[in-house]
Image 1 (cartoon, helix red, strand yellow):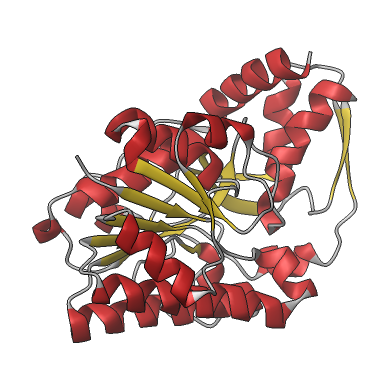
Image 2 (tube, rainbow, N blue to C red; image 1 turned 90 degrees about the horizontal axis):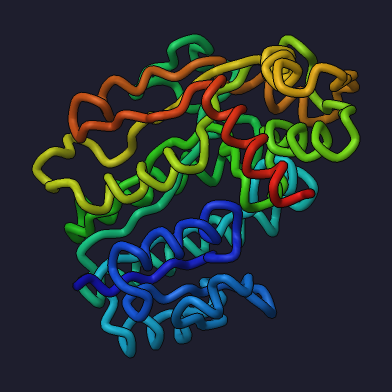
Length: 315
């Protein structure tokens, strides 16, 4: 049975990825770590948890060595909107944390490192419709810059040391379980909470802003697929992935099918400029062809599931 380490387990993806992995590999074989003073109760009660700062090399070495880790999921990151408020911190955590993980992983012969990249790696000069896997990467945010640098760094460690690091360029992630974490696509999570609680929402993006998105169950499956697929299937180490693309207005309209008196107004803020620099749709055909990527949820099925799950919890 694999021994798995999840770094940044308290984040939007990590907090659901850990229980998902524990069901697959056994509670005792998945170690959750984070910088927070407390990880979510569901993680602490479900299996081993260690408070870890990825910037602390010695602590990272000790955790990997003492727990005989086989695979690492490195999820710790400062996201796009937060990163624009504190760019130096974003660089420190996103880049220095990653190189620590790569360096220690290659020294301890970790078999595979899964590290999410992002559509933030793209920029205004990237084709915005059906964005290809191999294209211009000139981001305008610190978060995006760290993702491009991280992709190059991971490729370097593979070519120089043979460390298998696999990345997916994630779109906006929509989750029914964890709150937004400082990203530009957070509106697509916030809107559901406000629709249920207040039946009104003020969106920080324009109504016609189209962005690629993915529902959390598909996101978790994507991570596992990369972690378990035969290495011979991978002809590159960074893949475009997506689930659906929609505008803020289209999401609001889909929610109104279930909550007819829901009202949305639009007051774009600094995040609009970030969103405008990102693709509207993604070509993920290489991921589908090479390792069988196949998301389950579209806008309608995701909206229905989100409202059902959140509705039960919020009531």
